[in-house]
Length: 464
Image 1 (cartoon, rainbow, N blue to C red):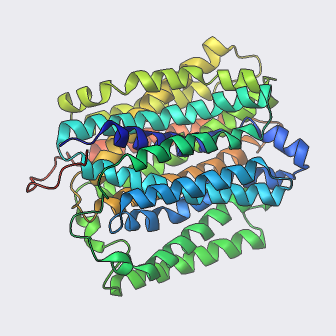
Image 2: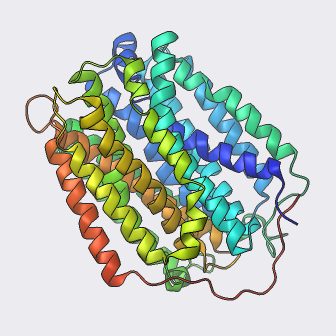
């Protein structure tokens, strides 16, 4: 029996909210800074706090989704996300706002890993799974774009606080969907295991290591890459990473089983996602938003509306995903996506204060948006297609952790490179990003395997 419409709507809504909040605050940052009298470091922390906590908790969330009832995890994520959004929208100090953004990241981690694990678990046949993953990837792109659009509208007509408070009704709608799920969707074979199969020790180390690295990445652009705080965080991250690896090799319940890396496609997908996350996710939209407001003198509303074509092309690309996957190999699609995004970044590198929207910004944005969907669709599919039922949650959590870690690194590097000279220069960051993705396309053509799913025995179908 195929998953019900409520299941599909709930999973898509979860993806939309978590990607929306990656970009929705970008347009609101100037107003936040003025009203709360935030420092430059505080403004940067509003962006990175969300990515830091999201990236730090994705692996644990993915592992939990392998052993616990997915409905309860989704509800927990929605509650945390809604409460944190309300606190952020009512914040009266920078510390309160930054803490709320971290809370949003925790809720987003639960939502992202659980929803993606459910997609790979419930959609057991290749055609429906490809169709759903296409919707999922397109929703991610639409969420990124709509974050800027909705942020601009809300800031212009209401207040920066509305960009956070808008999540509360969205969470309420998604929560209705979890109650319409008729069966507790616990993974097959996980009943009765509870938290015994999670590997709590590994989860603590992984989360601490990822958080330390994320803190180093957010601290570096503001206080300097050679500052004591940056070095302390990086050293802690390195030490915790070593402890995590050694502990995982000895643990009877590892958070990331070493056999997962023997599954065809897992390593390749994460390598590609690392490069892609650095070059073409959070950093791109943050710098474009800053460029439009601080260099091109766009209003918040005009800045948000500038991202409208990105959302439209992402929505248009979604139906084509399954059709393309049936006709072309994974390698071909991934290389094409990487090249298209690389070309788009190259076009964006030529932006200047006098550039027109139609000839200067729009062509590059359309290329990045179209390739974005294709790359996300193929990498997520490759990372999970050959994983077993009990590995899909952690496999999806691993690739999402890589994406968030890379996104935080990309945001830090983009801002640092853009401000390396007077003002805000986009030539250097976009050029380097285009070269990185072009090199990744060459690496993919050379080393990326032709992934096909292994034959599987009949498994439990989705719940209606």
